[in-house]
Amino acid sequence: ETGVTQSPTHLIKTRGQQVTLRCSSQSGHNTVSWYQQALGQGPQFIFQYYREEENGRGNFPPRFSGLQFPNYSSELNVNALELDDSALYLCASSGGQGPSYEQYFGPGTRLTVT
Amino acid sequence: TQLLEQSPQFLSIQEGENLTVYCNSSSVFSSLQWYRQEPGEGPVLLVTVVTGGEVKKLKRLTFQFGDARKDSSLHITAAQPGDTGLYLCAGVTNSGYALNFGKGTSLLVTP
Image (cartoon, rainbow over the protein chains, first blue to last red):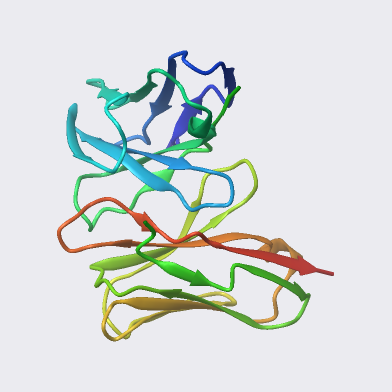
């Protein structure tokens, strides 16, 4: 069974640029959630995708957007990068939507905005 | 805004000591999870507690969910250097699906 994988592992971007992060969900999982973890903080929920549709969203502006593909992999896109977007971006997959499904995390992508 | 407050924020102890980490909230959760995260890695799920008053044991780790499902604790017996890491609690509300994380407790166990 393959776990959750994310790419790239590290990324450096300049303020104002755009970035795309990728996530492959664990085998058999159809739901992907994205979290932002700033230094010294717990992860903050960005949004969740279930069967290719956005299922819910946290308190993040519209310049944070995403996609889920038919194979349940996912992308997180961030436009007009700001310095405060520097963080570890975590992807988590689960077997379904709803609180009864446990979420399993990937290793994250470390984004630095200069 | 963090729905869950964790304490202590930092903990440095010697091998063999016992410790307890607390996770408190004014919100009710349908379930609560504990994760351990090492630097540069994603959180790894340790346990999920669902029923108020539930106690789960995982080797030297004991997890308890409060009767009202608003708080939880993690107790480690005879801590080892391999227990070093960031311990995160995360709750899911009855109406939601997103994990609401605390800020975490950073534990350092020295030989």
